[in-house]
Length: 277
Image (cartoon, rainbow, N blue to C red; front, side, top):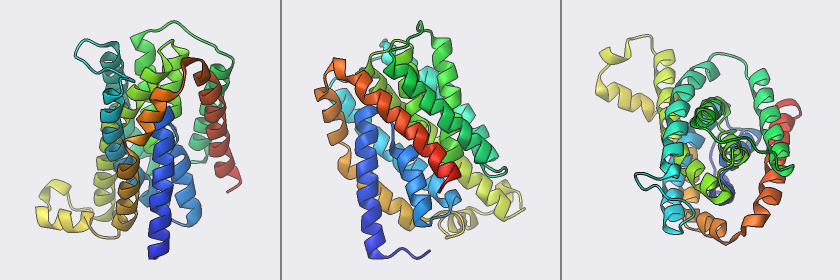
């Protein structure tokens, strides 16, 4: 589909709104943005890498402001940094596997699983269900969320934020960790999508192809929609300082009643767009 100036501006507003939600409460950018873009008419295999790259940039910028606002601490010995490393290490490996799977199998059963999982986590938070904290649980959260992210462009934030809170981590810190953890996971997912697409497009071994040929292919319309990527990047960069500021201002007691219903809605949205849209 052709990107008109009006649609370009609409996508900027969409990215701004989704990233504001994501940076504020640790979820929503891909889970909301990806299906909306698909409903508009963009091919899912262009939408997911565009979401991944733009969220990596937006997540990095928002993480700096979360640190500045003291919502989270990534000092060398902090618990937040250790959780980030556990989630990221497991999530990156799961992302590579899921990106390959997403390009080769139907998604209906896998997106159903994401919707049910996210919805259940929202219910757990709302009823204030908690489990004892362990880094093994955080590794499990990283595997599930990384798989979700590369598979559909969403499902990372609700699982990582919700998983940390259910395991007893403070809500504001969980949001800051999630925002930062999205960055390496999204970058690896984006690179994997590009590499797999290049291989599927041309059977010539990738290492045998010239650098110039690879660069031309990456910037061709058959691999990525750069007009879509640019529109998303503009939106996420503009909103970067605002989300973490809202996180700082929301009181501790309100988080369960904000995040629980929101995660339930996101899970329901994934199921609705899978079967009805």
